Amino acid sequence: MKLSSTQLSQVDAQIKRLIQTDSYYGNKYKELGITGISSEEEFEKLPFSSKEDLRNAYPLGIQAVPDEEVVRIHSSSGTTGKPVIIPYTAKDVDDWAVMFARCYETAGITNKDRIQITPGYGLWTAGIGFQFGCEKLGAMAIPMGPGNTDKQLQMMVDLKSTVITATSSYALLLSEEINKRGLKDQIHLKKGVIGSERWSEKMRKSIREGLGIELFDIYGLTEIYGPGIGINCPGETAMHYWDDFIYIEIIDPKTGKPVEDGEEGEIVITTLVKEGAPLIRFRTHDISRIVPGTCNCDKCKKYPRIDIIKGRSDDMFKVHGVNMFPSQVEELLSLVDGVSSEYNINIAHDEEKNKDVILITCEAEGRVNFDAAAAKIKELFKSRIGVTPKITVVPIGTLPRSEKKTKRVIDHREL
Image (tube, rainbow, N blue to C red; front, side, top):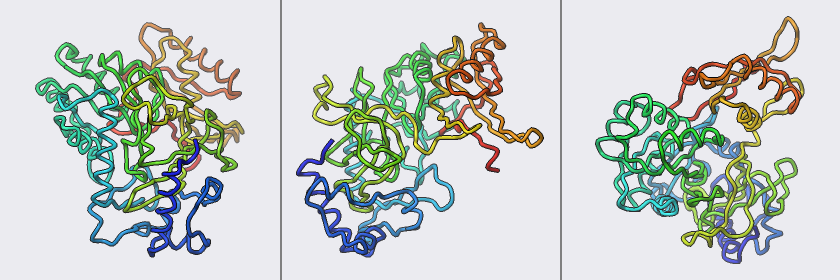
């Protein structure tokens, strides 16, 4: 996906504006002698920006406007060490709401809907993003935030919520509770807008059938506005993204070189009109691909698409010299009848035997033989990945449910 002439001039304007400031990236570009771009080739020579840059610039080194123009700050939810602080101008906030409302509209959500918002509020971009988009659309916002499942279900039933917004982990928890309490015939949900973490097809199926709703993947990250920069349309898995606000390229995570449309790689995002903290060629570490061509939807077919997020380039963990990703684990578990989407992985080092040990705990329906399921999973890992983990199969509902993101891999070797 090449830059259009409009996008090229927007990136050039961002660079020219940045170098007029004393910001982290303004100074970096001046040191490198970068004064602007006039071609795709020059764009691809620009340095990448990264979360490490943002930590180095803590707290407000990336701010590219005067203080009096900053109306809000947000902070990334999943960082360690110094947090990442992102300043927003009034225009940034409104642009984000416009994109978010566009996401709702793409999902077929209207101002007649009642949207129950369960993601967290505060420094995190999630809850307030879902709310501002809802208000921009003109729909009814029910700003619950996470937790207090009893109250969530009461409001869902009493207010007749038609849309649920959540992480996939919390959507699963709500689905299980609704069915456990026999409330399914009392809820009015039609759609779910799910974001914040990658989720397996088995998990999608469980939520979709448990709640009886149509599901939509929403994409975004705090560094680039927040959730709402892309969503899939009905009946499609690929997500449209709003290329009048952001430019997406896909690179080979090892070489940093752009790959052809359709090839998988790491998503790199450039903000085209962001004021408070513009980012050029920001490496997200999310793995996906540009989906070539256009889809059949009328509302948003002019917008380009990326595939569902397959994982993160920094999610990899190594056991016995073998590189593994959570997505591989999910794929193998999906091949075993009766095994659910919920699992966790613990990795430790056996000092006595001087070797790493991987323990996978997963849930299964009561109708299956747990020992046979464990043997099948172990054989799949051995034959397809080349490692032999210890497998524990437990009843559905045993593993803890999360109101936010679920931590799947715990590596005790790092402690």
